[in-house]
Amino acid sequence: DGSFHHVNPKSCEIFGYTEEELLCMNWRDITHPDDLLVSKTLVEQLLSGERAWFSQEKRYYRKDGLVIWATVNISLCSRADGTPLYFIACIEDTSQRHQDAEIMQTAADIIAQIPSGLFVYDYLAPDMLYLRDANPEATRLTGIQIEDWGGREFNDIWPAAESMRLKASYLQPFTTGEMFETENVDYNDGRISGVYRVRTFRLPENRLAVAFEDVTERK
Picture (tube, helix red, strand yellow):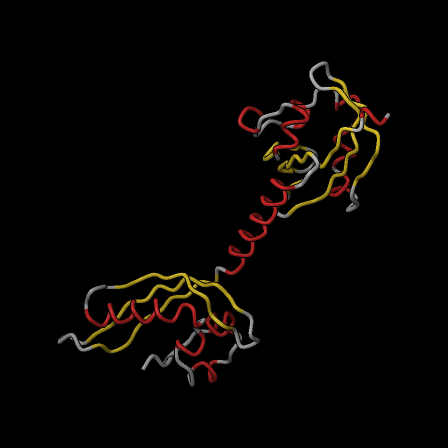
């Protein structure tokens, strides 16, 4: 009937129930309703012999009502005559991975749609920045194509920046915890020149965003 007969401490931690509570429940009680049909079909295939085991990433409800993602690997133990005895399920909580993916997708959407130029750098302590992404406006304003410059270090991309100590200022979100903002970065390396309004802020996964606007004509 899908009831739990044995649960380990990790299962209790994942779902937020005590062992006694879980042993009074079955897998349907904690499965998200949108994933019930697929899970039921896979279980039926195990029982019919179509599958020896299966792996599914699905949503569950914790005791506190939160929805979590987990990967479950299930196999069927049977008697010698083929009569099913019980299922063995190994569960891994993958919620953090899904949350990280959602954050990065949101960041990617923002990067693409933000009206200012935006560069995203990977930060490597103590002071290295490697170009990871650029939105269309950043490419239009600077001519820098991510296909050509992706993975390059900040000072390689901006040769005049070192004498201006720009990187130290841009890194303030990491070094001081404060966002950096200025109305007047007067930059000229012979390839790119202009006066820029710049704001830098921290992103998840040790990344730095540099948003900028060309304000040369306003000066």
